[in-house]
Length: 415
Figure 1 (cartoon, one colour):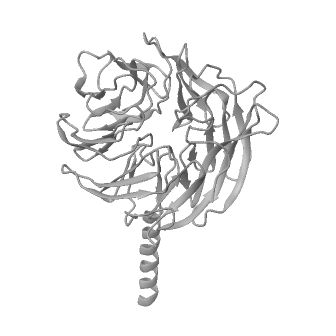
Figure 2 (cartoon, rainbow, N blue to C red):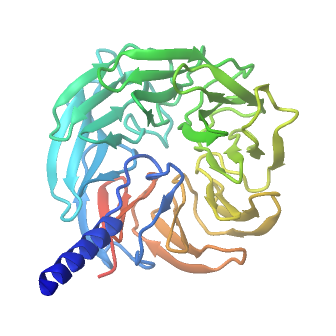
Figure 3 (spheres, helix red, strand yellow):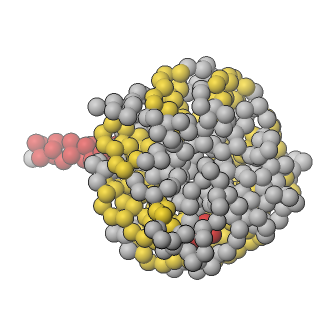
């Protein structure tokens, strides 16, 4: 009996350890939406041959980041169709352990009109999918949003949200209860919308009121809790707004000068941290406990030194990390904005940095992964070249980094 009890205890401990080791990465920037992972023993050094568990070619031209759910990887792709001006917009599923492609299903066929011109750093499949339970949600901006089951069967499609995206699509959706929420900041009449995750119908749609001359932006919202009430924080051109996720009602707003906003917000220390993007980005710390226009009262600090246009910010303990598009990494005191250090890490950056096991992981556009020790003193641990163009952000699960390049998806782990 004692031996049997000991066996049960050991099995339970191993099960808990296994669950901790295989934390999912279900959306853009992971389980918290802020680039944090609980994974341990991630590799510090790699190349296109060293510490590569597997490498899988990925079809099409796409920059959506991979996500991980129950031992499977999901991502999207835009595959040019021969004899057509359009693309087949697809959802892919791979085995996370082996890299084997399990299914590759079309969510949307080629549009009847020629796909619009996009920025050279963009694709027609740049938004990152999101998974919950037994459903996968894929978003292609104005080209449509769809829900699939985990076997690749399309359950619903929505193509009713028409707008001119300018430079293509970028922002990813989030899930709040039954709402799939995302921004549609196009050339004119920008709006934020919530679809019913069960059938794709519109739950609410609100105009984003802004005086910006250039109204297009590409940011991903963030759900936060303030004084027991939930807010969806969504930056756009010249304004960041907090919305009630149930109704879409605007709670507060802060104005600034900036358009083509890409970075996803982060939240901590009772403040929202954003970057205002082009032309002269400013990083802002904002208290989200106000109502109405709180520009004059709730901005705690700002800095324009090293603020990013594209990569999202990263908050770890009392430090705020940011990486500019030109490859300048900075560490600031999150509460005051005081600069601890600023160093050039090389290359240009679009991917958002992540944090795990005391380290900051940064992927530049030239395919080099830079690993820094988190802290108030700058310490570079490694620089790792894959020699392939990289704009997508990491996914992390099961002691491994998953890195999408313009040609392949890699599983990087210590061998």
